Length: 206
Image 1 (cartoon, rainbow, N blue to C red):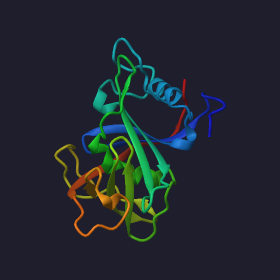
Image 2: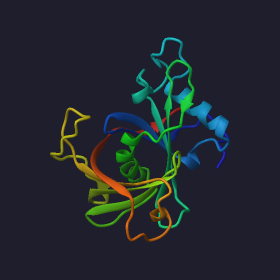
Image 3: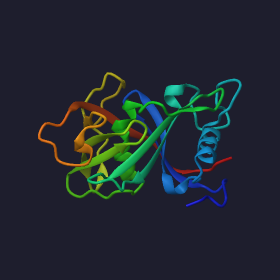
Image 4: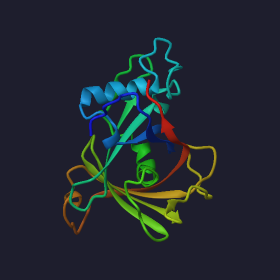
């Protein structure tokens, strides 16, 4: 999809993932051209802004709280969602996408549900995510209630001052064959993270 009107409202979810905050979008709602897309995303966050305050956008004036994440249904074998992420520099508006922003992996699975890219059933979701920036797989498991991610719980993350629901993450090393096929000894690490929505609704680009 190419946005005929770059100022048309679109759905987004503003979420905390561990120690970072980001604005999550569906890829199909964004400009198709990469350069147009990153410029559009930076402007939405309020950058470039010489003051670094991002006063005319959704950014929070800090590179760790001015992140953008783009989600799409995956076409990769045994994957549900592809996610790309970047940190918007508040002053210059440049988007650094060289890393994976590992903290936001905790939010990528729930965000995909909130944006209706997947509709998991039962009491617990198990989503397989492809991290586009660095090329590796993340498995995210989290509780559901009435088909929606549970956000209230007693798990305490060092990154956040308030408790929430735990999200189980299994991160496979880049190049691991588990990204495409079965592997008797997958190279992975497991950790618990937390994420929750801060805001969900319609954003209006400038």
